[in-house]
Each structure stands twice: as structure tokens, then as C-alpha cells.
Image (spheres, rainbow, N blue to C red):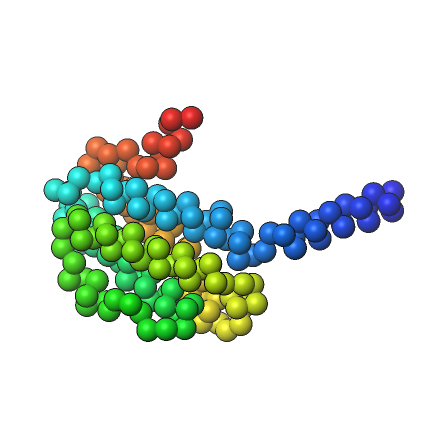
Amino acid sequence: MIKKVLLGSAFLVGTAAAQTLTTTTIQRYFTPVRTNIEAAADTMPAAKYDYKLTADQMSFGEWLLHSVDRNYLDCAAMKGEPRPMSADAVNALKGKDAVNKAVKDSFAYCTAALGAMTDAKVTATPEMSYSFLHTVVHNNEIYGNLVGYLRVTGVVPPSTARRNKK
């Protein structure tokens, strides 16, 4: 019995060493939400980028720009450099092509920032931990909002479309 417990513990320690908090978070949570938001931006017709569920809510395009803005803010913090695009410049973008390009550029920027992260770096300061987690959590919240816009306009969300193909 003791040998089984020790063997099981050794297996778990070896697995934990190979799969860190950082790599697990990126693989399980960041990469899928990046895929979903980029695909949502591609899938929504250009004429619907200004669509709002209600007059007081952000439009579909504004939700995407919110993701871009936060990606640049949080990922610049992780990289320890000034953000590559100001909030004013982000919010000045108009039209599907410009917004879609900004979405993809901001996620590429974050992918580079996350690629340089280690567990030690992520936990080094509260700001670093916040930026790391916010990049993942907030983008998932944004995608949840985008899904509503897609469904109401008759577009199947990318995550559902992939699941339906299986």
C-alpha cells in the first residue's frame, strides 16, 4: 500500500513539473478564447459590427475593441514595456477590416508576452498576476457577450460550430 502511495505521488510530482500553472493556463484557457474571439470577428458580417443588443450596450465591434484595448494594456504590463497602441488609437478604429486586424494583432502581441512568462514571473508581483489572469478571464467574459450578439443576428458562434462538426 505504501509503495502504491509513493509511486502515485512521484507520478503526480513529475506531471506537475511538466505542466506548470503558466503553460496550463495558456493551453487550456488563453488559446481557446483567442481562437473563439478571432473566429467571432471573422464570422460576424461587416454590416453587424455596429449592432447593439440594446441602445445602452456596446456594439459588437466595440466589444472587440474592448478586448484589443485590454490585451494591449495587460500584455504590455507582462512584457514590461509601454502599450503598443493607445486606448484612443484603439477606439478610433472603424469597420470590420480595421477592427479584425487589431483583434488579431493584439492576440499575437499577447501570445508573445505569454510565451515569455514563467510561474515565477507571473507570481512576482500582484500587477503581473492580475495582468496574466485578466488576459484570460476577461477575454472569456468578452467572448460570452459576443456569443449573444452572434446568436441574435443569426450567426452560429465559432465554439458551437466547431462542436457541431464533431
